[in-house]
Amino acid sequence: MPETTRARRRLFDLALWLLLCVPVLLRSDPNDGGSWLQVAAGVTLLGGCVAVSRRRPLLPLAATVAASLPATLELFTPSYSLALVAFGYLAGRRQDHTRGSLWLFGTVAAVGLLLTRLTGTSLGPWFTLLLALALAIVAPWLVGRYVRQYDRLVRSGWELADRMEREQAAVADRERLRERSRIAGDMHDSLGHDLALIAVRAGALEVDPGLGAEQQRAAGELRRAAAEATERLRDVIGVLREEGAGAPTAPPGETAGELVDRARASGLDVTLSGAPPELPGMAGRALYRVVQEGLTNAAKHAPGAAVAVGFREAGPRVTVRVESGPGTGGGPPASGGSGLVGLDERVRLAGGTLTHGPVRGGGFALAAVLPRRVPAAVPAAPTSARELDRARRRVREDLVRAIWIPLALLAALAVLTAGVAVWSQSRSYLEPDNYARLLVGQTYAEIVEDLPDHALETPPRGLPAEPAGVDDCRYYRATVFAEVPVYRLCFDGGRLVSADELP
Image (cartoon, rainbow, N blue to C red; front, side):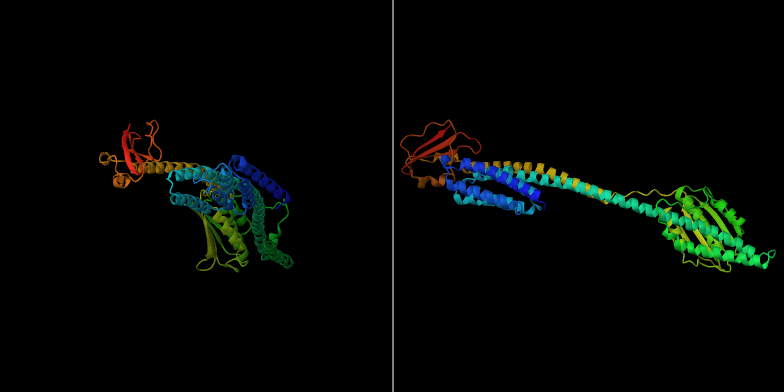
């Protein structure tokens, strides 16, 4: 980690510690009912929490909750309220997983309920604890989770942009290499075809009776030199790597029919059946290459054999077939079929299929089925784009959770509070028949079975003053849901001295 980053983090932690210490100094000093021991303990606790907040984000939050509960079961204290909010946010911002936080939130709620029951207090402070937990801890924690996801999205965006730039450069390099390879292949096919035709013409001169022996020998040497040049061309064509180097290809604008005528004029015995169709784009180029490869192989490996080129159209597809008869070198290409491998790839990219092999009776056939229209390839979305889309979706989901989870908690808390309030009110309801049986002068032990389990904690406002000279007055609801009227029972020395219904 760079030293500047460490220094910046230290300054942030120091400022956070000083800020969180302000409420402790203001609310825990001796002038405000506290003590300097409480101030020292609070400042030390907050310092330790800030120190470990980066490595253990949940530990400072748990320590602050533990320091707040002894002061009040309602959790929200003036001294540590700001620390609860800050550490709740930092826990969401710095924590990788959410399971530990959810366990902590559930534990705080359970411990608050347990302390409420152990101290014998009502459930009111526990509901206040749940509200403080939702607003002072859970809500900042959700905000921290959202900020964390947003920062991750921004960081992922820059990383993906850098990766896409590198991938784009790599794709450009691959395209250049692929184009050079294609040029090399076209050069091999075109020059190989032309050299094969030269060999055919040289072979015709070699057996021409009108030439002398010396001329026939020279023609034979020319034929053998053309064949050797074709082989060397195939071996060395892979070194075509110069930047910007051009390459001769087939004659521009030449069709498959013109190619057949040129081969026939060179002395090759070629027959043509069917009209050569005109196909667009890659399909047309593949058709031309199939005819060129078939004629080249026939001239090279079956000299003197008859060659048949045929075209057949059937709906959306075109079939081309080049078949050579048996010759002195008939059979599959002796070069190992590298030309056929490249041709098969070219036909496949054009949306067609290529077949080749020996035919019955001797000879070799090359056939291809090509579509009139090359099917459009559906570009796949780049991997980086999919990752960026997933990151955006995660941020949107976290934002939705940051909104609906606090609202759901508040709604659940409101429903729970209302249910407990109704339940508590029903426990302080004194039935009219039981009230009618009460007699002044009875002891509390005599009437306790007719009284509800709990009296009202605080009487409603506006009631008459309690009678003088009594030890204790208790108030009970006269109806389940209405606040008034109420029954007031006053005791002196353990005996009932008055029983009034107060509107």
